[in-house]
Length: 269
Ligand code: HXC
Picture 1 (cartoon, rainbow, N blue to C red):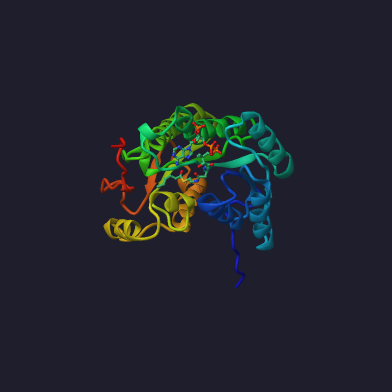
Picture 2 (tube, helix red, strand yellow):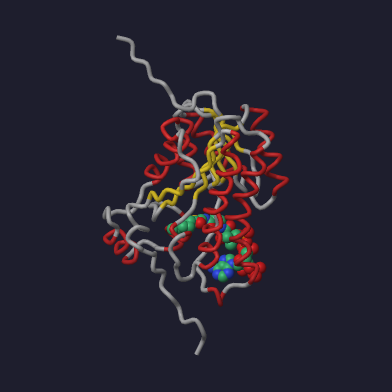
């Protein structure tokens, strides 16, 4: 008997922002496992190169195209170079994000803006720059949101505002680009183990342990849990899904749970 293994994304190109680390690195690796040519985007070329080398060592195809998602012109150059090297963009993963815990009154206007610029403007910039290079019909865009989009959290005013905006941007692009055969969906990862975001918001110790105990599924996510959802949304199995913002969070947002970062006094004295 012949064993025939069909890889889902053979010959197609994925453009992954934030692909140099964390959840987005794992998404990039999993897309490559399924045959995609992966264009990794992030601020630091050497980090992208290291991830690309790992993918190539495992038999995949990948290259790094450094850009800060806040810099639209740099993204235009990256996506054009990725198209030139690998072909039209079939999948766009908008994963680049920034975060730090801070009370609103302890944040400068520029601090608030820096997260809006990375998360919200960066997602728009990525989608807009990729638009001119998309595979039509058939491209799939996935934005990476956060529980903060639907759940207010202390010390997260910047991320809550930015990610709520990302979700509405996702839905609007689904309306505008659907007629071209482009699907646009969002994923809400919950608390994900071994990520910078988790280290910043719930450092290892009692807070993190309590968080896992309270999850309806009684554990935090792995990066593969999130990558699986992204693979699904990019695949033909989701061919009639667009404008959906799907929690992949073990029930965290359904339960109305928020990460409780310790709250310092809001005013001295
Ligand atoms: C108050 C802070 C601050 C803090 C930075 N700022 N950290 N203010 N409390 N802890 C202020 C700075 O003083 C500055 O304001 C402004 O923010 C910009 O800071 P820069 O360091 O100049 O900006 P930049 O180098 O562009 O860095 C952006 C960043 C940084 C967001 C601040 O943390 C970053 O690069 N992050 C990327 C990696 C990351 O965050 N990964 C985690 C993503 S996880 P002033 O007024 O002084 O100029 C994630 C998931 C969320 O997003 C969901 C989890 C459940």
